[in-house]
Length: 108
Image (tube, rainbow, N blue to C red; front, side):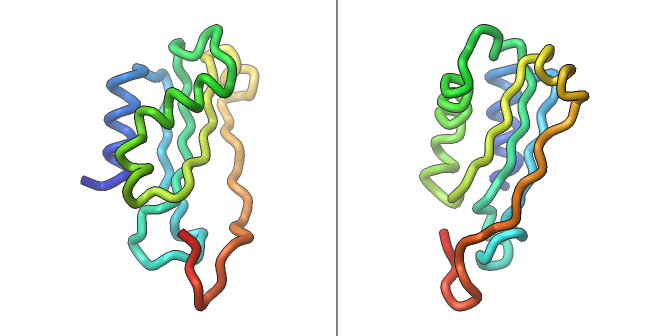
């Protein structure tokens, strides 16, 4: 199964988000083509109401355990309640450029 599909279906089932975006950003990093190693996940869910950021991230990391034990090296998480998302104007953060690795030694 594609990692993106796994993350989408797992998060969708567990959190019933009002907004979910999973972006494979592996191409932005010095990894082999098709690596599926770096992802940005934006989740908006009522399930986050009353939870601190660390608890939200732990929840997503728990759902992604299988992928994190396999191909996924980095998982950028952006977790919001519907009110927080609305206050942001429905905009997620832009990922920064990769600063690690080199052309001869891919980081994983």
